[in-house]
Image (tube, rainbow, N blue to C red; front, side, top):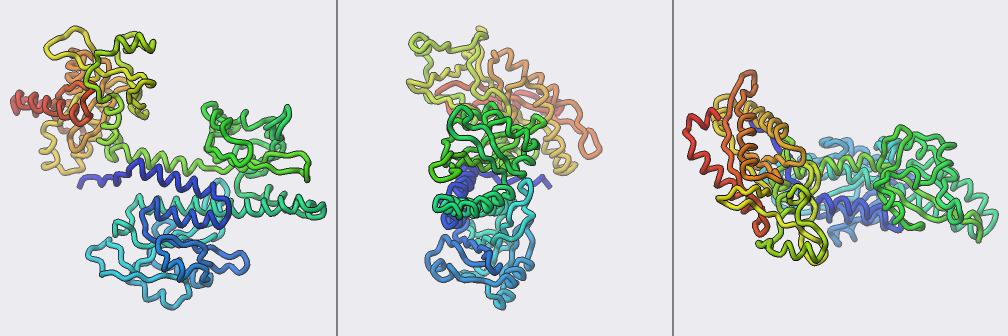
Length: 556
């Protein structure tokens, strides 16, 4: 069978998930944070109902602290308490999906014996295997953050979700997203509690000297033993920003001793590309995500949040900086973004990413006649020193820049070499490649052999093109190459070179097989859409395929 591909995840969905996680960390209070966690499940993860059950510090039981998605259910169970024993039994039941717990409706009768608050919804029985049943239960436990962001602490609470909008059990990506969301929610709730404790300490600091001494010890313990990094820096004066004190968590995160940390300010430690982000962060209440340098020269992604504390009433003010390790979250975000834009089998950019890169080069204006006058008006050359149009998608792995044209952003038109002429003009060539004889390999030797052929063809194409060219898998046995700055003869030479690479024997499933390749060369120019460009190259490929004898096509 063909390798199962990852589900297509829209970048807009990833951005929404990222925004919800960011909102959790900017809520003003613990209550706001809990409600933001519940609302985020609805807005970003695709469920219709969500409940946040929080462990009470007094007795360890879990109280329904926030609810979202159904006002009637919210009024019914908000504030109700379930015993810790019942929750422990429930989390030990059902199916373990990583850190998640799924209890199917077939085991629902067991739930009637405990006191866990829950709601009931009506609906028909499932029609197929992975359809969601009204009595299905899905829980995402939240644990206090451990060292380096690991979720090995104590139970902080449980997120309960119900009624996925698509009516199905979540797949691999949906489970991973919910699990990651619960991990970040636990950090946000822990930090909200920490901020609340600090704010209460600050109030006591301002009231009387006796409360000040008691609060100093409380603050010291919260500072020293906080699970995330903490620092105190000077505020104002010639030494503004210099680090005065750090806790052990921050020293471990950056692998620097406390004595060495006092020689720096955060501007000395931040990645050069992130210095602007640091400077744009306001002194009080500012928040930024940036990279800080470790002792070995590497960098770690952190979330940095500032607040101002006073040493005494009307006394010196200091900057309290909270530093949270978000390296794992950034890594997961990059992985999810890569899966959304790349083919799971070959690792090449997929169809959506190909169209995005191609569209970024094209504007809707079909004419380029105003280029000379625009150059004179704005002082920008239309082409570089080699006569090539500028490529805003400079590398195969980079993100494409904007190509929109208006009176302020100068857009260099993409122009195709004219038909029937070879006057040395260069443009953006689009080579549409279709493998010949690939179906027979699948039929004779199986899909594993076919997959091995596709992987090897992708590797050979990537090896044969230039740095900056794009090789993408459009689907099936179709590939597309974007190569900028080529003349007509250059593009034809490139197609011959790529075909010669492909037709060499390929080792698949213990045997040597061969496939041929047919190429169609199209040219992109402004005024065309990405689909029109690809269709043009596709049609030329079929003309080329039909013009060659069948036996010759198999041989390449």
